[in-house]
Length: 293
Length: 253
Image (cartoon, rainbow over all chains, first blue to last red; front, side, top):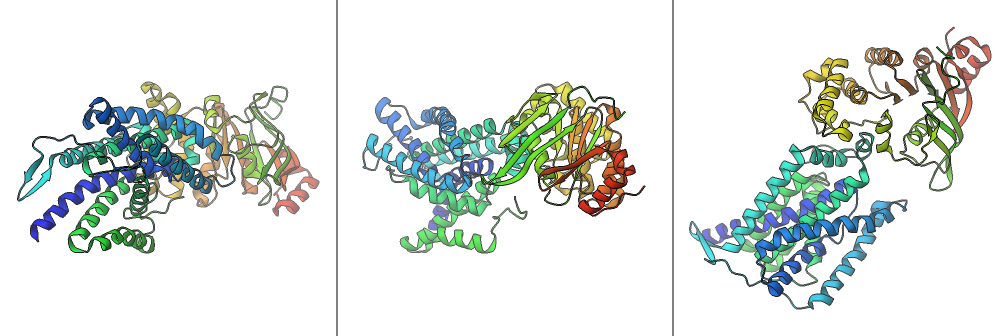
């Protein structure tokens, strides 16, 4: 039992890191743009498929796929912003319309992946040597440990950017007060495009990491990650990036520990229980004590 | 001073502006007003008269469905809000415009966004704000949201002033501020023209506004009701009556 718990903790941290990245990119997007990206999970899985295509087509290992995904998804996000978002501004209620629009985008993205890669589940068989590493009494797969390291570095880099640089502070300022940042002379359209591109790049990179951590993915896996992202965002507080990072790890730990103690089917319920509990008892999230406009 | 700048174009002007919500509900109807250079222009009127809406339309935060916005006589209708700083026009809106979870200094630095690469100029701007309100220097590492209401208002004013604007738009700068601090804020506003700053002041405090302004506009239901020099408002019995009636305040002679 002790080993199982240790295993659960290790896996919880690894999986939680992935959830943290999925959540932080979605919450940044919502915070800055007030847009609900229902297609976020599809963006993530598109990153997994990019890694798969690079590996099976050109033999590029997943670690090298990371920078490729970051650049490609950043560019795609930037372009997608200008295609999609200006249309929302025509609506009386852009936030609600964004829901519908991105629901459409998610269906289209999943269909496109289905067309390109087929319905079979895919995995990347690139193995590290050794395949697993002893960590005290337990063994953890090397690929998963590498993914955890990358997750940690990305989270720290993101935190540094948001809290130590002026553009990062401008992003946070836009989350705190979207009108005031415009009065400061900040072009909100360009800042939003940057936030969209950054969030999309993070989603793509997370997708590559998912290919390292999880056994398989298919074009329909996106919806699952969208739901996880929403749980993490609510748990961390809407538009609160640090909250999302912490919430992702908490959610990952809870989910993995639940598989240790509860039947498989019950473990899935844990996520929703956390979501509902948060909404009931801490509606502004684990870190949220202040109300936001 | 009052007639100093009649002939040159106003620093900022609304010309026959209509603003509508949800396509149909007109908030402003044919509203015209001018902020003339070197003067303090006041905008008063009962609640719901469209005072704040007029200011938001001037600053590009709302798009007029008809009419024009002019800067120095040039048409800038539809210009987005973030371009106004480049034209030397700063706004302190009615509702809090601070970034509560950023430090006082970061709030000031963000105002320097358009020249963020120029360290000397940013330093100069910070220094200007600190010189104007020394309290800000003492609290520069504190979160903006941790300060009192009055201090937050001084930070907003200092932040706007740090950029050396030619024109400053103020929307109810003393709303929900303690009377003693309000007096300081009005004294500060009164001193702005001497620094070469044109002021457009929207205020619900008619008593103070009449005393501080050079020229006054009275709005009603999104339209111009009447306008004139502050002296005319103080001396003309008919105007005084009108003010008493429209904004429920009797001007002292």
